[in-house]
Every structure is written in structure tokens, then in C-alpha cells.
Image (cartoon, rainbow, N blue to C red; front, side):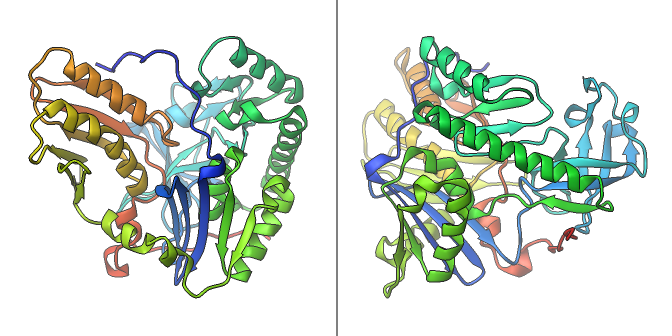
Length: 415
């Protein structure tokens, strides 16, 4: 059973003066690290040898309808077909019960990658295209304004929804947490830019031969700025002039207020060496995570799920060990980009009500995760089931030697 809501959702912690974003290129890797209070809290990495398609929008061609799956295999021009299931398909009147009622073999269709390919399994697709901005997300096929649950409830939430509706007439919009501090002019400017992106994308789809890539998903650096830029990081340190010019161009078009926060790091030493980030990334590939009070986490990935075992060490109080472990579990899942089913084996507790306290702590810790994360009830054995939406490739797979990774293919990009 899913745990009940733990009171009114609080607004997410602002990045502000204690947060920095560090960006560099290291061989085939482009990396963006978010540090809050000097501690690594989010990590974005692209591997040029294994490009991610997450968020990319394609004009696909229906290869065949899979009746048994109630889905359709879509040729994206990448060498590996994507799967569009009925729940992610849309007809003229919205959702459909059977995908065969709206799609036919050979038909062209606009789709977006919502999960990268894993092994022999191709990417997962949706027709619900969303275009992310720093404070708004545009859903061109939608009709409503949805406000992030992180903004809590009450008059302030309702007022924010009213402000967004005033500047985003028509179609669908998702109001991100960062919108709370945005002016009406900022909301309107971003809405106009996202609407223009959709118009260009849609116009291209009418002239491009399927299959074709219409819009590439944001790379690691842009994902970091989109998800954290609205919180006004103190500095965005960039290792290298070429990468700095690239980000200056993007900020000039999409986030002028961030342009003044870009700072060139022209080492030596290398930027990530200054904060010992390479060593920390290496530790993220291991299974054991020490906790400050002497306990530890053991994180094991299997094909079906990820298991987290909490060890109390020499600490005598199981509740204290579990409460310390909860936020670190949430942090590790984010940094490792773990997706799918997660089972946490907490230290057994004796007193009544302690399990609920641990569930509340874990639920609060995952509240600000950019990936949708659900925490379910605790069994009598102290096991907690969680699910975390897949967002791109897991860190361990992304950094694995090339021989261990599935073959990558280049998409055909329309001129």
C-alpha cells in the first residue's frame, strides 16, 4: 500500500548561494555536477559513444501493430525500433483503448522517447510530447495547466496557476517548482519560446520524410541548467572555452539571467579534480556506501530490480540507523540514475510507530527527485518497495567499457 501524503508538500530547497553547477568534458563524456553546500547532489553525464535519445522527438513510421502488446513498433531511423503502447497513444479525441484504432502500418507519427533502449529492448515512446523549460513544461497536445505538487497547496498555488493561465492561453502546461519565483514577463517569455519550438517542430514534421529526428533531447549540460537553473545557482563553472561558448549561446537564447553566472575555469588543475568529483563518481560504481555514524548501505543491481541493504554497524539504535540511511538512499538513487523497482531492506525495528517514521523520512527524501518516485509500505520483515521512473541510462551502464554496452546507432537528422 502506498504511504499516505505526509502533510503539505514543502517547496523544494532553493539552490541559491550554496549551490554550484560544474561542467566539463572528459574524453567522450560531457558532465554536469550539481553541488549543494559543497556536496554532490545531482549528476548528469552524456557518453558520445552511447548517445541518449531521452526526450528526443521523432517523426516515426509505424512498422507493425503488435496486437498482443496492444502497441506499435515504430521505426525511428536509429537501427532499433521503439515501442508505443496504447496508453501512450493519442487519437483526435485524446486517449484510445486500442492502438489499432488510430495507427496503421506505414503511417507517420510524431513520438517522443520517454525511456532509452535497454539491451535488446528498444526505446519506449509516447505521443504526449512535452517540451521542458526552466519554469514551464509545454504539453502541446494537452488542454490544462497542472501545477507541480512540490509547490504545496492553498492560495499561493491557486494564484500561480492563475498567473500561468493568463500568459499561456491554450494547449497544455506543467508549472515547475521554479515558477514560484518567476515574474509574469519570465513566464510569458518562456511560454512563447516553447510554443515557437513546437510550431517549428510540427512544421518540419509535415515536410520531412519519415523516419526523421525532429528535435534532439537536451544534453547533460542543458538538463542540469533546465532542472536547476531556475533556482539561481551561485556559479556555473565551465571547464574549457569551447564548452563555455556553447553554454553562452544557449543561455543567450533561453536563460539570459544565467549568462552572468557562467565562469570559465581554465586550469590546471581540472575542474572536477578541485572537488574530488572523479573519485566520488568512481565510488558510485561500487556497492558499499558508508554512513557517517558507522553504518553502511549495500546497493546491488539485478536484471529485475535494485536491492538496498541497510547495515547499522556498531550503532545500537536501529531507528537512528534507518533514519540516517533514508536521505542517503534517495541521494544514491538519483546519482546512480537507478530506475525501475527498488527494494530496501531496513534494519529491523521493535517499537510501534518506528516503521512509519522511517517511511515518512524516505518519502520526504525522494520528494524533490526529478524522476517520479513512489514509496510503498513496509513489510513485517522491514522491506520497503519503491519504484523510480527510468530517466536515460543508469550510471553504471553509461560508464561501462564499450564492449559491455549495446551497439549504438546514429539517427537520421533532417536538414
